[in-house]
Length: 253
Image 1 (cartoon, rainbow, N blue to C red):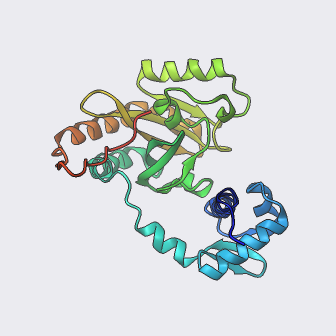
Image 2 (cartoon, helix red, strand yellow):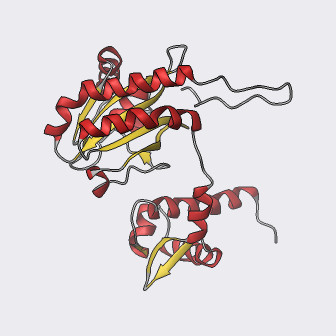
């Protein structure tokens, strides 16, 4: 009997939920995988078996990690090429000031804040800030990018009024700070990258394990964001043809 479209979507969602959990750690056991993916243990075990057979997941002594097929597919993902090209130089310059801190460039995507590039640093020991990672609610980058955030995605302990106030402050000051409110001990500072029309299209952030290292970096991060904005403005406009329009740098929210 053929599966219905609804059931098919449910299976895919479950498989991707498991892979999202695996993307956050090196190896994870079945019990935690099922709990974090919000799946029954039997369902998680069945889906993991199928993913292992496809090479998307590997199993080692009852623990699971992402497999080589997932890696190969991931290598084909090259998001926001123009943005990453514009950010390369300014991030290297910022790294000399930030001294080993984790640097990232993120964009809004489908209601989330997703990292598209950066330079690894000390914060990666706690939370991997690599391309493709979705930042949890409450990051400084999300404050910079947010036009509005659904109440259900607010950081723990925040009210809608608090979120609106912090977003407004970030827009006024041109920089946002967060101290231990996003991921455990991490603190971060972010500033906006603008396109030629003045719209915020990305956020540059520095993250550290010690909040005292973040406090003095606001000006340096804002300068890096301004340099990236200037680099974007100098890039040639993408060519368009009558048959197809070139995709935008990011989808505005």
